[in-house]
Image (cartoon, rainbow over all chains, first blue to last red; front, side, top):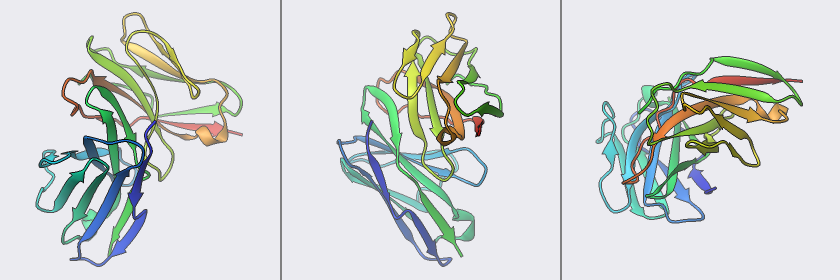
Length: 116
Length: 113
């Protein structure tokens, strides 16, 4: 399966600051990456689908101006949480697909964000 | 996408086979059955998937009933490291590459020493 990394693994920031999370596909070029978040004791919820070179598609209820996604290359997607607030504290996880005709998604290790 | 139903929790003795059931009675002919697991504080890990036939890999076996309305994930010799939440997901066969994974609540499997 694919190897996916995320950086940082955990971050603590003050309310009102912005935080950038990187997701890298280490062993293949991913045309599509996905961003999820997971609150404590809850299941993963898809936030957005990111396609290389085009704008991300956000799920209903996810603010695109608050969660900025950039997928500028086939191996890197970034999620920026702008003006973070304590309610944004969560576990953010990215995933990649190997190709458009292969449905399997491979997940990164996740980034735990704590906003004080 | 078809909804799946799983028991909320299960226990299994270490070294025994763990059999995790999943109901997907409304699955359509163009949907795979996928299994992922999530160990605490980690990203989900792909386990196995199938369409109609039973499948086996180095991690597990997947048994799909002939009518495709249910399936069972089998971990043949469970170890303590298999303690995790297991998700069964129906995934449409891809045409455009943007099909989503919709995670339910899964089954929390606890391996007992």
